[in-house]
Image (cartoon, helix red, strand yellow):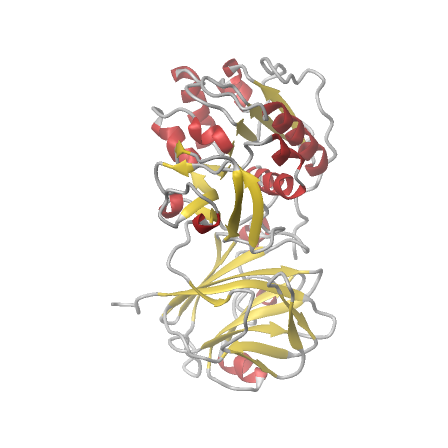
Length: 445
């Protein structure tokens, strides 16, 4: 059975939390009532953004909406081991220069190593150039920027809570940073800049602007947006920032492993290569989402079969709905052929263990404890990675491995087959986005 999602608790802001000055209070591990708590840190030792007060106010508003308490400070003295233990995340809000001494840096490193969270906003990348740990945590250091201007942001991950509410392209005005290095190999890129849409980009056409990662025990999210005061009144940017915070504090789950080398099978614009088998259908919405209706049928990729591969796709259930991802079946316009000859990675909130979300349907349950911790509730996006190598099938949910199954049935084989997504029945509504695949070397090669 699905465990209940993290409760969205009503926050009460502490009157003692100051915009400027040290945060005071008992040194306890987070809040005694379970409410999540974050610290906004905005000390500057270099350029100071006049949008900082707007940013602090916006994060306070997001806390009220998102169910977490917000404290704010510009006193680096808040960076002690005992004080940091009170917080689920620290937001570096347009900090600049060297803002922490060596003891404070050591305390923050220990905080991250013990599962603490980091959110970096805009000039957080223009901070602590001589502290290698921080550079790795932030993901990249600032190099330069052109004038404030409109640009097109390409949203690469539309399942992460920081970007799931955005269209495939996001047009907005900001100060667009160039970075000294590209974080793509180390972090999971959520959005990047189209350098042809503005002047002054220097990253040779691969220009990440928002990313996430797990880092030395903690979670880290960075967004390069947020220079202007107007950013913090912009609903889309506020939702972007809230989603990043929610992931960092564990109120939402996502796959933040680096992702490179995948080829799109469905990018939201065309179903070329796909074929519907059986009754029902999928509706392609304007935002690039496929949603099931009717059934029982199967939308399968007919252009070719696959052997060893990593298949990734994003999915969302409206409620207690039923669907699944089929792999390893022969070509057929009969959806039952996939059931009888392939394997289904199930999507179903409530069923017996071998027939619920993450299971290899009818054959092997997922690790339910790990599945429940990784699973987002109905109405929120999840990401599957289904990795097939020889007769071995492994499943990751939002970056967490939840199933490891090996086929031993001589009548079935995973070594070569097609893949598809199920439309299960009239009452079932499941949506899919961004189906992509990376072919892997065959086992033993």
